Image (tube, rainbow, N blue to C red; front, side, top):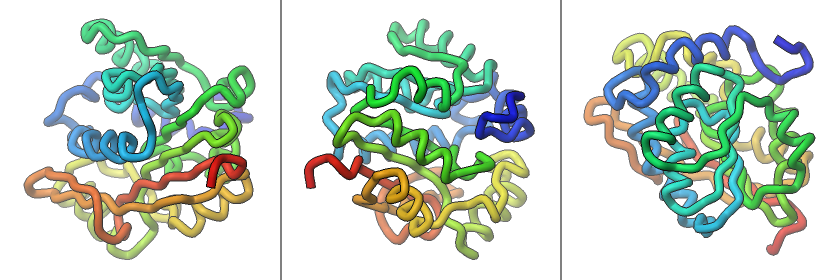
Length: 238
């Protein structure tokens, strides 16, 4: 693994080993299947997706990328896990969707396509990289003036530790054990500061409520565990 890339090789291998099951709604990614409609609704409420140039960074097996393409967006989707991209390409082909998938780093995409995108999405990735500050800076490079960045992650709170790590990973086993490290979880205040340093303004933070028993997901409430964040390039309209 190239040491200049903002990636943890162990984390990457962990997710790549699960690629075969990413489209199984009852498999290890079932929480993402439950959250995907909520994420899409959040994006629709803020961005006109039809014809929108979108980069989905850390796309995994393509759950969100396919939803964006079905909504009419022109999607470039990257991930460093080859198994995930292979599965994503096959599933998109079966669905008749044209999505620009690539096994590519964020750094490489930012170098060749700086300022190319109206919307950048980065879901459940920031808590898995060694340098989240650098991640935000590179994501910002992808945006056009006034472009929008939407991330999802988990807050670093005692409640998140109890429910998202102990409860979801070790008791309910909704996600594989060791998926999250508490110290790497991100507070909204930290995200806002990192965004400002990269020329972004935090417009919104919305909690995402997930019921581990019913596997139902809804938007709203305090962002004590999962949350979505919307940032806009500072030179965009107020």
